[in-house]
Image 1 (tube, one colour):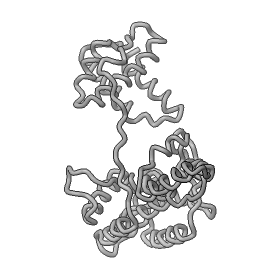
Image 2 (cartoon, helix red, strand yellow):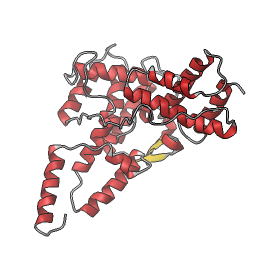
Image 3 (cartoon, one colour):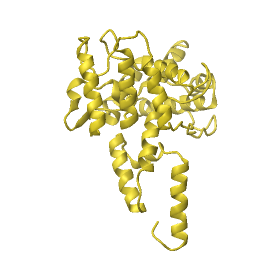
Length: 305
């Protein structure tokens, strides 16, 4: 069997188990091209190490190596001519959490204000971006989930989020104000007679690709004074989801059992497989640190924390 055929079968296996396997698929296909340039039909340790070492950063070299090592372990179980490279050649590359931007209400207002000024004036474009950013901000949806929403997914009970990570679906209830705003957008949407059933559409009536939405968000963030120029760091569209998680926790008052129940509910609402995934979204804010200080003082005095 050709190496490319074995790799394709491996990718189909992972995707059949519910994994998107996009970045990993790109990596292994890159390795296949590299190896086939040497007329190799099996995974060779020296070739893997040379290919992985060509990545521009330690993190990427580490990811390349571990991705190919996992693939090699699977393929070697079927054919011992595949070699399994060692895992520690490039040392350890711990996962670093990127500092998130937690938006204030004023910053979200400025962002939506910038969206309302998008051109062409009088088109659905500024309305669409105002609606999609508002929905993400008030529900914590993943950007991809918002963009994949279909008209039948908007129900009286909330939004039906279908087959997201690990092929899980969930129902996301909406506050009446959010539901009303979404219905107002859908009323405007009908007027342009879209060519797709997706909820959020472009001025031509087509669905919105993620790359376009992300690029537009960066433009809006710069227009609102929330980011510097191209190439400079700053807030991301995904930070709206982080903001939802943090602000939600800020509104949770009570003892630690109440907080634990809130975190379990929040994890389900966000579509996380484990509550630990939700912890990853949280970040210290003055409000949360103040709550921690109060709880610590109560604990010191022998009260309920």
